[in-house]
Figure 1 (cartoon, helix red, strand yellow):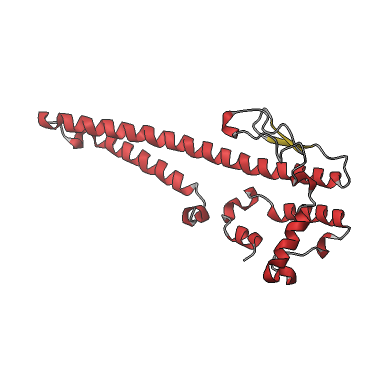
Figure 2 (figure 1 turned 30 degrees about the vertical axis):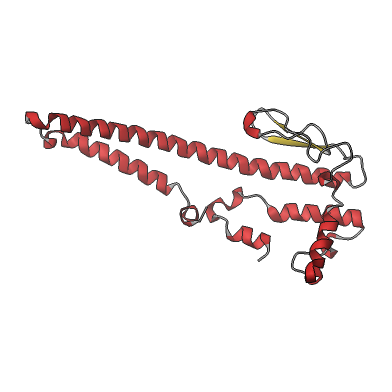
Length: 214
């Protein structure tokens, strides 16, 4: 199965708009390659095509993609420069090479293509801008989802702590004639709150996410 179809088959339907637009990015790449080879994008070989026999098609496609200057290693430069772990909080992740990647104040990423003046550079500039848009879209979505679940988790933990404290109170007072029935309202309220919070967390997860194997 082609990667594009496999990618689509694994999508959670309710979150489909949050996924990276693989088809659009692939189209941009083919336009870059077509420009450099002087061929229209739809004339380029595709995975699984007739040129695939005995690995020849794969070698041909790799040769084509090497014409994409933004992904080439250039003498005296590194491919993406000296990259650093994003978690270190560095504002600049790449300082040399054909691209420069920076983080903005809002946490989004912005790529500067440094070879735009070369032949066909404007096509690659469009690709990197599109790539930034797609990457930031996915990143923002996951951050929002994590924040939402974290808030729900904190609320559920708070309710569980209250329930545990109530249970300890029950156990400590059993020997003094204290009866659970006397505090039935409080017990019902605590268990109801916990059940409601747990149900809300489950309901906020799309059906596809619940059943997907991650």
